Image 1 (tube, rainbow, N blue to C red):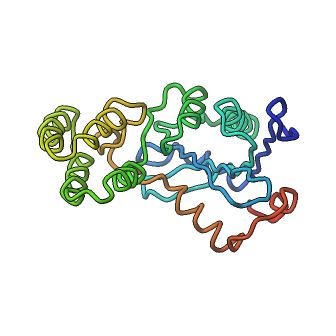
Image 2 (spheres, rainbow, N blue to C red):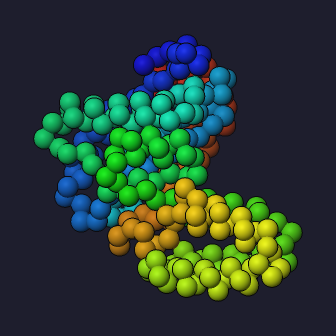
Length: 243
């Protein structure tokens, strides 16, 4: 779907290749469950349209890119078209393959998560722990207890069950609340009770990428080595051979 970028006709174009899609045919031979990652990167074109990448990680936690898209709107509907388009294309090109991820991972962008789960409702959502920690670091800027709290976050991330997490968090929350009540309440509402609470190790099977969204590193390399941190017209960006 190539619209004009307006609210009525969003711009959306996706690119892939046979080699990229063939990765899907290998998924069933992987020992560990696989994760479908989704992430956006910005400042690549004059229109300020984000680049959306969908990819999977294998048991070695290596990223395999499946599609690259450029969209004008960061909405659930537009993201859903990107994800559904990839799923439909895989069905057409590889009809013998069942394209069903065990997990889907995003950062804290609700529209991305909703789009992924609408197309793959049976998948377990995961939250990128790197973003959780980064958000907490920003929230704790200037806080004298910052290092201690960040170490607590590492301990919470490493918990191996919901029961262990709840026991540790209750103790930490009481301690945090004495000197950092604002942060304690923020963390509870955002990362314990909020939409993005699946960032602990026990949320995924062994061998599954559970710390970072693997697309993050790729996005950094695209800006550093491919576009050299320059912005391009949409037509040129689409024809530069990203895929």
